[in-house]
Image (tube, rainbow, N blue to C red; front, side, top):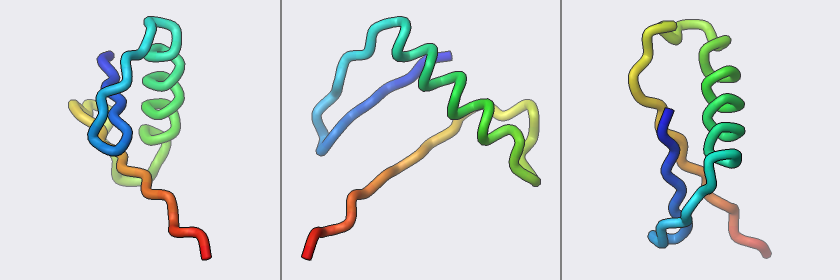
Length: 53
């Protein structure tokens, strides 16, 4: 599995260990969700930090 990480548009390089941990964790969690096909091809996640008051 390939993992790409970018923060505020800047690409962040990942070593093989971090890439493996992220891919396994995300894929494992997502595939347990109702309605997700076990034969998925691509998962996209976007995380936005809420503005602090």
